[in-house]
Image 1 (cartoon, rainbow over the protein chains, first blue to last red):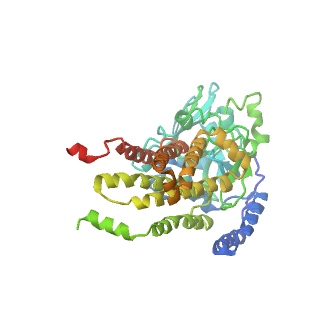
Image 2: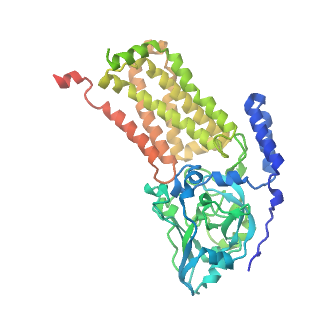
Image 3: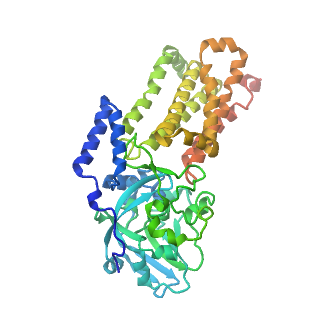
Length: 302
Length: 202
């Protein structure tokens, strides 16, 4: 079953091409010495309407440390990743464990578009038009057993194809996890495309998780393994620094990262003088997901 | 004429203002790139980081000058103050980009300086450099006499704070800030060894 959730943002919210180009000209004009005041005004006006980022922004500005820690490293290096053929091992507490071929998964799933806000823990944000399917549908395909409480995910680890894993920035392979109810939530998707095109390697091809109300690092890329379990699974950033990165990592403007405030964010694509935008509780998906955490202390369970 | 003599001869002819101009050029260049999309779609952070990294490099260049004379006989002392003042300039630009373009709020700037240790450390480094920048003129050198040399050893503390600030601000364990720190500690370690090579030879 698909189409359980409907976007409030549509492709009509995307920046029309002439406006997009006009913005570039304005920036160039300002740089030529026309003046910066007009530019600052322009940047402020853009905040009023939430609009998807350009394909270029989304695919040239990435955190994917397996391909380097710089924002442009993944776009430069990820072409080496072999994404076809691709298999996803689904195991643990499922009725039908095994290696699922990506092609078979795609045949079984209904691909739909989801335009989501994307908030990085580093306090920048984008709006991304994903294509994908609900994780619940994939988990149903494998048959989740009744005792399962969590879902663990693992990214491919291929030293020959991933120059970034030579240095232990993190304990490779990258691993992530969700509570089962978070994983089954209709907002939680497996993304296989952006702007209607196959998802580029630097964005996590061939299949990545997208959990829009959590910080971006929870949305693990290039998944090779999904394990259903009754134990809270280890997660990479939590292992690296438990004080800074919790298991839940829900977007929460009231809970600071120890090294920076999470109360506001820089909107990617806004330019040098863009005003910061206030960060929304659960990244703007409070209505949809707040009930998952009822009665929980979100400061303690950050 | 040896290579060292040639370099020393060349250095004598190069006016310090030429070095000022050469090393200040990256500041408007990166600002222009940030403005025109050359630093990517989120230009504030890269601009902030470029200025910070150049500041750290200039502090390190400043630390190289004494060992270069001690070990190789290269006399670049007249540029030491130039690099120091340039480093302070870039630290100030780094701080301004962070406060004005990134954080955008005086309250939050103050809050960050108090609450976030890596920012506290960076700010402490800036404050240590402040009296050094203010006394980087001939009048102060004459006025302070031997105290001037003592005062300017604060650079050693400031550069270590800068190195720690860098290691602390990155996510995970990254190589580049560790290399910077190793170079800084190496250059400072050279100063712990006996000052005069002649005494070792004797």
